[in-house]
Length: 345
Image 1 (tube, rainbow, N blue to C red):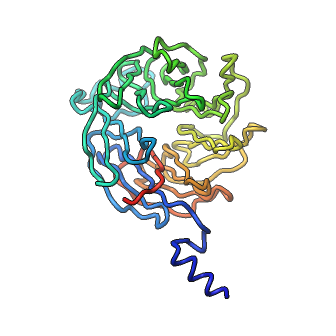
Image 2: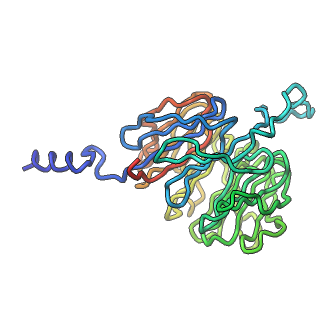
């Protein structure tokens, strides 16, 4: 009887060792090699590599899962700012013609077009209906609003210096923007797309923001301070500060669907941390690759996928045990991660 059940599960496409799971792809932007790796979620193997252009970083799927969007930038790669302000003296000039939002057709597995993005796009957020894209223009201290139907920039909104993290609120009414230089967090009303409003300043070079499912709290990492600030989005106040283990340089953030767990990649500390959002305490730590950055999660929320830049790989982390169980070699300097429910690609 057991053997018959095993065979039935096999022919139905189930993995007996892991249980039934949704088919999905893990898309990884590789900043230095200028391509996107497509990883099969079940086999954990790279099944395709798609050339896209210079410095692909922010990456996300369209709401219908048919396309991938990836931010491309002609700004030269620079290290962290130096205290003397001379970090960019020897860099080559920017190639502004390379800036754009690349569109990958997942069925055809190829780049089909590049839409305008504003100067130096890094990360972006899609509107609730998927018709607009809000793009952080890092070198321009602005957010560009791209109409995806027409492929045109319809507005530019000034924010703080070096905008990077972009997140749509669960109700779709607000886009939050984290700005590295002064640690400012701005909010944009998606109904009007008018001037951004300063929400709070946390300092420490915030790279991203994650929100509880009801949007009441924002979790913002401070890379240079090794902390995560908990922000009340209604009162615009910092209500808690979570101290991470020594050496942590928090970068990417990802919230579980029920809001009970926050996952934070710790950059050069080579860890991903799990935080209980009720106690605001670190409850798990997974050792991963070098300079952990982008984080994605399988549809069943059993596994994390973590992009490790200098390691040129993606760590697969078991959420239940917070242990790395697999590593997938990708392109040069993996940066962003997007998980897409797999269609008949």
